[in-house]
Image (cartoon, rainbow, N blue to C red):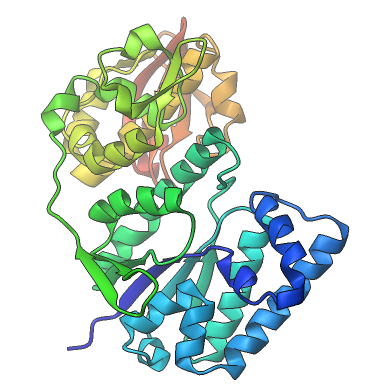
Length: 377
């Protein structure tokens, strides 16, 4: 039975260097120096646009063996499809490019070529800020890539797709990260052996994270996943590899920390109600939590982590919750507690809400559930 594949191909800029003519070597150093530039200037921008057209024309006019020499990305794809791209016309392709002028151009040119050669489902994905300009830029871009992988790829696998990372092209640093990410998100990673056409396939290994080591840090990990920054002393018991620590000794999740959190969050958030700072739980809220299914509990506690993060950052001021477009915190009209306190609410998703009462420095949570809690908050 045919299994649809989703192939994530890393994209580099070597294709532009490979179509330079002999009398254009003076442009080679300029292209290399502009690898991480978000915008190109003057003559170089014009030349890069011309190279896009030239590369596409040469690929279209070449046979398979020439195409594989011109483009490392295509070398990997032709290896997957035994030299016949039409075998992948029903597969899904994501071209993973750096957030740079040349990276985007290379991906756009390859997208045009693949769509002209019977591959219908081709999309470009550019992680925000991803480049090798600085370690910080690379790390932030990888965090965005990890978030994308967690959001998109499990659903495709659940639908029956085989996930393949085509890592023949792109920067070595990006390949190194994707080697490890592939062990969590891909069914297979492929390379081309050295400079030839022989495909090397690495299957996913059955890696597991020891959840118990991280369970006692659930609150801090959940809040950092929502963007909270802790003084390092507060989270020093968490393995350093999971943290980014700035010179002022403040810490948040590193890219690897985000990857590991994605693997353990369901286990850590679907069982017990966590004691987030500035949040207090009434018995009615605890009962609503207990009645919720595991998936709903995860979504609820991720939102509670976000609420706690915002309250901590603003000394308990609920105005920060009101400003957040996702939470949509507001006060019910005409609904108060028995002792006259106004009752508020915030959103978990389109159908679920949490009702609450603002108190000194935080919130007291009353109910959780569908829109019906609006009638009895």
